[in-house]
Image (tube, rainbow over all chains, first blue to last red; front, side, top):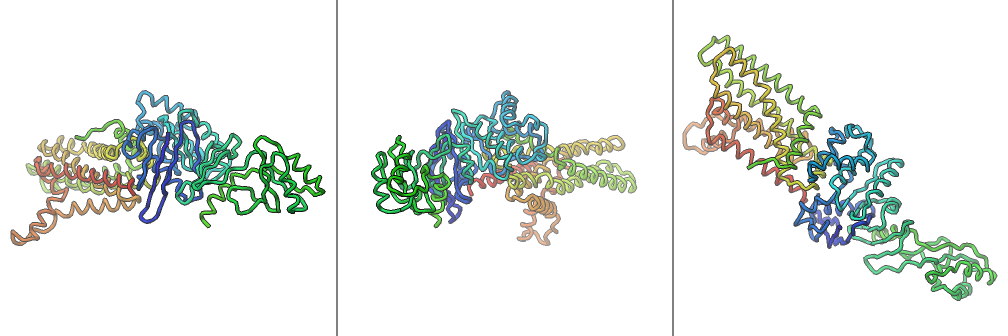
Amino acid sequence: MIEAEGLTKRYGSYLGIEEVSFKIEAGEAVGLLGPNGAGKTTTLRILTCAMSATSGRASVAGYDLFKESMQARRHIGYLPETPPLYPEMTVAAYLRFAASIKGVEPRRIAGRIDDAVELCGLEEMRKRVVGHLSKGYRQRVGIAQALIHEPKAVVLDEPTSGLDPAQIVEIRGLVQRLGHQDRAVLLTTHILAEAQASCGRLLVINRGRIAADIRLNAAGEAVSIQTEKNAPPLLSEGSVVVAARPFDEAMEARLRQIPGAVSVRRASKESALEIQEEEPAWLVEAEPGTDIRGACAATVVEAGGELLKLAPARPSLERIFLNLTQQEAA
Amino acid sequence: MRRLTGPSLAVCKREIYSYFVSPVAYFTIVPFLLLCGFFFYITFNYLSQRGGSETAATDLMVFAIQTMSVLLTLASPLLTMRSFAEERRAGSMELLATSPIRERDIVLGKFFASWFLVGAMLLATAPYPLFVQRYGNPDVAPILVGYLGLALLGGCLLALGLLISSLSSNQIVAGVSTLGAGLFLWMIQSLPPAAGTATLYGTLREIAVYMSLQQHLTGFSQGVVAVKSLVYYLSFISVCLYLTTVSSASFRWK
């Protein structure tokens, strides 16, 4: 639904984004995640025709953004970081205006306003003046505007920034309701938890480049990671971290003999995508589908050692994100 | 040539809505009418004290139309200064820029909205000619043609104001620059004539005088529609609106 291919944007000599490529299918909700200044807004503004790219190509719903801009724009709903509101208008008048400039047929406008108002929880606010609304409600009006023409691609720039915690929860819920089988949702955020809550896939952007493409399961855990360079494979499910005394070669050799243990290595602090442990520990990778926890505990105890820690080894997304974005900066 | 299509009509309606919901419309129309009334009264008083000549009623209206042209110069920046500058500052320009609407339609929508307001202002001065008609015997043609000239002159000032607003994201800067440009285009008609005939100054002065918006109004206020004036006004509007379109679109390419 949304395709970017080698998008590059230069502001004079300053590089905004470089060779950004990705493909988002209908039904997907994707978070574009990155530190401030990484190029998130630049990418979104190009994808919504608010700005041109220096090179590369992009399309939405099959329409080239640069050659068939008018058709493409009919299928894009965009919420910029500051909602594009007219403070002097009422909510209903504003949505009516948004619908008419987005090419909604006049006879369908009233129905579309009803739908958007209902979805965004704005029933009580229809007649209120936009400028008098709270920030959370203004954000909802901004989202309603982005949905009014039933776009195939919805693009939201930092939908929860600047809101209080209660409002954040509300807007997050609203964003989750946007997902639709023939709609692609792309949102930016610099908050990982937010992306995990709303998205099934994360694109990590750092210094203008896509650093990783991460797929999440329903619980918000990474199930696959693709990075620019070929990334170390993720630890298989069932892998554990074991800390024991004595922390020596002999103990390591014993752990290696556990049936189902694919590899045993010392958890390092350097590895980009792996666990980092404060105290010395082993990382025991399990053959997929085997449970080696009991065997690990037994091995340590039988060898006369003390078991200090036995924990599932799953690199936190936060760690992955920080590693991806900090390593390059260093 | 110019036609308001769906989306630009929507922009136009929204602009008019905003003029009246925000106090801009009232802050522009009310002082304009008060000042018009004031100057009309002074002129009327002056002409009636001088003793009613045959042409007094016609003179009164000629003078009133000239005065209104200056008042329009002062009032029109208030209508156009926000148009692009404020939308850009507030971020609502992003809505227009990402909607399936052409730059040209945005500009036309805004232009016709402000022109509509100027039309309403001029219409609101109708009591003056009606008053003169009631108590005097002015020529009707100069009044009607004069109003046409005023509407065209207003269109020029608005198109210029839109262009200046599209270059800035600060409405105050846009407003003051528009006022300055408007006053300049009024004043240059008063350059003193050249001493000789074929001097460089003489040529430049002639060009400058031709550029003056008010200079062309003189003909209209006497009931004459000069082709060169009509052409000047219409091309002035077209060029300004075209440049506004270019300037507005250029923000995309930055």
